[in-house]
Image (cartoon, rainbow, N blue to C red; front, side, top):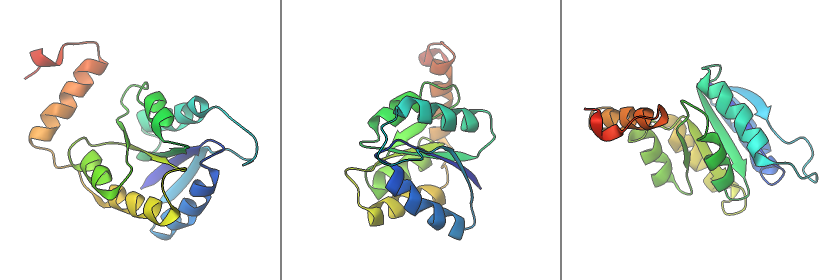
Length: 155
């Protein structure tokens, strides 16, 4: 799977440790929005936009974004059409973001999660398939909202 990665200055260390892990599990890693100097501040929306657009255009299968809390990256990424970014702070939220919501971008907190938990969250998220079924209808309704339509009119 082709995975795009992005981070701000607070997420750089986490991304540095995730890259060899992802490559070691056979994924192609594309560093699109990765801060190059840990001590230099940058704006997370710029990084989220790069990764979200690569996922939206199907240049990458999925994306992973890391900032201080993960919240800002998640908000920014979800502004891009076709993106379903989810904030995961544990393995359960990572699992449900994939199985129920078919999330294509994982957002995480560099400040609140240790490196071991970050890796477990990524592992869970990467290995969890989308359940489809009734969840597909709901994902379709999200797409209706994104298209400016009332999801209650969609069956």
